Amino acid sequence: MRIVGIDWGTSSIKAVEIDSAFGRYDIHDYREVEITPELPAAEAARRLVESFSQTPHRVVVSMKSSLVTTRNLHLPTRDKKAIQSGVPFQLEEELPFAIDDMAYDSSILSQVGQQSDVHVATTLKKHLAAEISKWGDIGIDPDVVTTEGWALRTLVNRTFSPAIQDKPLLLVYIGATSTLLYLHWRGFPMVCREIRWGGHTLTNHLARKLGLSFEQAERTKKDPSVLQESHALGLIEILGDAFEDLQREIKHMDLVCKGVTHETLQSIHLLGGGSLIPGLPEMLAKKISITVERINPLSALSPSGVTFAETTDAKMGVAASLAMTLVGADKNVVINLRRGEFSKASKGLEFNLQSIQKPLAAIGAISASFFISMGVQHSIYQKRLEDKDTQLKRAMSGFFGSVSNSALRTYLGNPASLKSAIQKELDKNRELARIFGPNTASPTDYLKNLSVSIPKDVVVDLMNVQVGAAPDASGDSPIELKFTSADPTAADRLAKLLAPKLLDSSKPTLEEIPAQGKEPKKYRITLKGKAGPGGFVHE
Image (cartoon, rainbow, N blue to C red):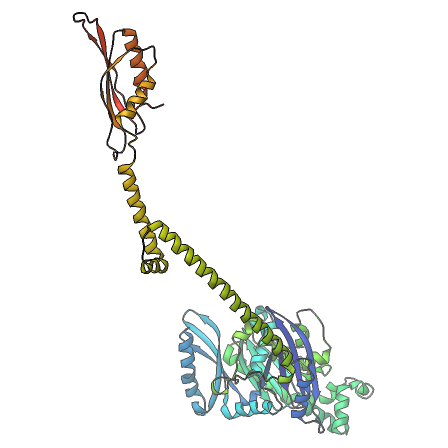
């Protein structure tokens, strides 16, 4: 995503383009167009935007601090809806104009327990409408209209560690006709005010001191080497008195800092074209007894470690900070005054029909091929489904025998009903097979297995057998066998042979039958146990 921050100044229009993707970013380009009598501000801004190789995805601009009021509210809730509804009531008591004339936005900076610290930026609707109209006149509809203070907050949070921010610090952006003083503390934008003092003030002072025209003095200010022979200390020696207003405002901000943070200023950081005057940081530090140094915003923000020219670094600070408000996590908390009735209109993309005729023709051809293919596939699958339905009807007629067409349609439309009917038919056939099928547990089969199990050399008479079960009986059947034999040895062999072959058999009994008449003495053998379904003999 290409994000462009544009700083509309009084002497030039500056823009920084940042390429942001997947949480990473890079400073892609920066531009500056001078404002001259021949090139007014609006035309300079239009030319600057047209100079970019691609149309940016997002444009971020800011309103002048003189048109905006900001404050930090401490609210006893962390509910976002309660905060959104509570902010207008807080503002209504503090602002000197009606709530209906006000445009505002808020951002939650921190939440501890049930307490929330909220930063609020407010302006009059007429000022915001004029700002949006100003950009609209040159063909730009900005996505974000924020404040200069919020942009500088983003710069500080990106370039200074939390340890440095633990003490208040002051950013001083010296522009051509005005200077911005931004007080920052622990990630919070405390105060941001604009004063009518800037680089042109110094140029006018220099022109009076040296008897030069404004243009000559401006060139001398940008290249002070010509003063080395007449003024050994350079511009600082000549411009010393011109900085009194700035010093007074900085001291005033120190008092404000003590009032709102109960801390003294830790350091002052200069940026902007006016900060490039040699010896300025040292002179201010001596006058106000606070550490003063220049910062280089572009070089500090560059993730690749690229060092930019000193002049570029000084001038592009606000433009770069504006673009950074939509990079990373900052985009979720950005102050954007384009809310409610001032929200960016949802405009459709304006197409040149002639330029997209070929892509539209290609899309049409692809769409036609797709729908034809879907129609052919539908026809093929429909035919296959009809064939399968016919096969299924034949199979059901063969299984159920005589079945009506309405029953077939019911079965086809309700698989659960078909499954139930098939199960009932199978159960009926199983019952018939059990009744009319062969009895595998009949006494005849038991006798057959018995005769096979007794060796030929064992001569016995089977006197009594009780064995067998009904066809539908389940499990093992009881069995009782009684034999007689004249040979006691044969009786013993028979008992040993058959007893292990019965299930749960009891101990065989052997009885002696006395001789009667001509009948010799015999022996009776009785075996009891259980026989399995396929015969009483079990291996």
